[in-house]
Image (cartoon, rainbow, N blue to C red):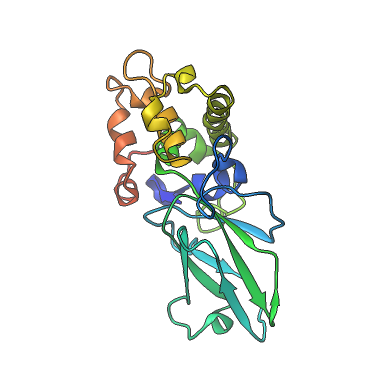
Length: 244
């Protein structure tokens, strides 16, 4: 979550990027643990971002008081797990702090009272996708946010506009992979294949080095280009009061 003016949180990380569709695994074979794998039964979903999220959103809370509690993950290239600050262990805290290391979808398995439960799915989106969501729909996403009594975005908040923009990017990637032709959307072929699936998103979003651009905030002639590029740094967004 990113903070805009009036102390409101821009709700794209939690509300837009919790689905497996945020990252595409279509096309070539992809490394295990760093991209979408086959569908799994999950007990819950959460979203993170490289560079951090709003306070409290990094916690996976079990919301119960078990006799014993542990958390494990095989996706150590994507995320790390640690005991929340101020507690001795997971059982005492009833939760785990999750820190993002890379882009992709990983899974955390809770072990409650010595029994494994279905894993929790953790989505870490490409920063370029976050940037283009802000550039194209920053104001509308803020207006669509559902706030709690403390003026903070609820984790159940949904932005239809943000979902639609994300679907456009994913659809372009799927079409390119089906046709094996990055040129469909003026994407650079070398960039597209350089580091999938992350490079898929970067190449499609940045496609068009002339007129037109795929996404208008990337056009050097637009006033929002500077802020769109600046949003590559989450602290830079948090310190800006001009996003919404």
